[in-house]
Image (cartoon, rainbow, N blue to C red):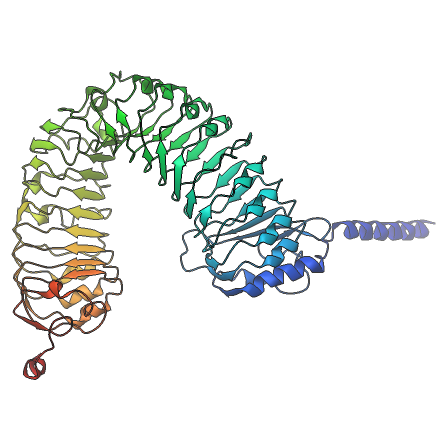
Length: 589
């Protein structure tokens, strides 16, 4: 009896296990969906991501097909193909197959960052009635946005940013009442923002930036009560800022910069109770900054630069705008005289007041150790810098160009985290070795001390420096160009023009593979232009004018296609684009 009992239990257990196995086995994908995916793969002529290499076999739902997900019925529900971030070598090249429109159970299409997927967006996508996400950003798609996208009534996320789309935004996108995110940024779209964009009750994210849109910013944007992000910057929008926008209670970011907006900043701005970033820069706004701006309790980033705003600034207590961290009022019609006390006494990380009619000695900031970036260029400051730099332990970027400052470079004490120094067009003196030495921070990327009174020689460059820009032009620097300049492997721009540099052009400059701009003009350089410079692949500008160079110009691009003026006023340079070398000269060179 016991034996029979265990046998029966074993049979029942086997049946039970078989039933469980049957219910958990993933369904085989439907052939129609597999055929559509293979049609997509066939239209991709190059795939350096190797994603599509996994698309083999008959079953696209077995988990081996990268980027493909299926539902319980063996129907493909998601197609997600994304390039790994910051890997510029990976891409797909080809076009989108219209066959994807046959996959009627698709809920998500994400094909982003592939760069070289071109052609148009297939009209067939309008048949995907279950689609909730259509993300085709950062590819190479062209043509117009199909108006049929407005038929995708279930769509919650539509992102077509970072392509080459043109034409007007289809008005019937306004039919997508379930949209949470709409991103059409970084294309070439033109015309107005459609008046049909009124019924987006759930919209949270709205980005049309970096296009060619014109006309007014519609007041009905103020009806998107759930909106947290609004960016229409870098377009050609005109007219006043609609006051309805300032009634959006959840808005965190309002970016209207670089348009043609006119009028004043409405006093109703205080209605943006949640706002953290407000950028109205690069427009044609006039009048004064309203005092009501001081009621924005959560504002941390304020950029009103490059407008026509004028004095007086509102009287703001240090306790007002308590969250403010960055402020940019540069290039308006302000004539401040001195930096307003409420700015000097506030704990800020970025202070940009370029072209604000400031004069006298450089200001002293009460909480200087929090500042990471300062721009006080294009003002009328005089005197030195030593007290100004005191306790600025977090400073990364300093721009004091176009003033009348007079001090020695030896007075500069750069913090370890420092990355960008722009002091051009002052009366600064001393030696470059004070800022270019073994102790110089490895973070340093930009040095512009051009048009000053700096003397001495160019110091030797140690390895490990990350300099991208070195502009020391229009000074009184002498000596020669050190061959150790080849250690500046990240250098993009090199300008040593209008100095007193002698000696030859070191062949090691040819090792600067990232160099795009080279200006050695108006010095006393001798010898020839070495052919080793032909090894610089990205060079777009070079100037050797007014030296004492002689010999044949390197006969390869781009040196033989630079204008003749780039080689003028030397001893005996010859060869294209100058007259050809005479046989006797060519034999000597």
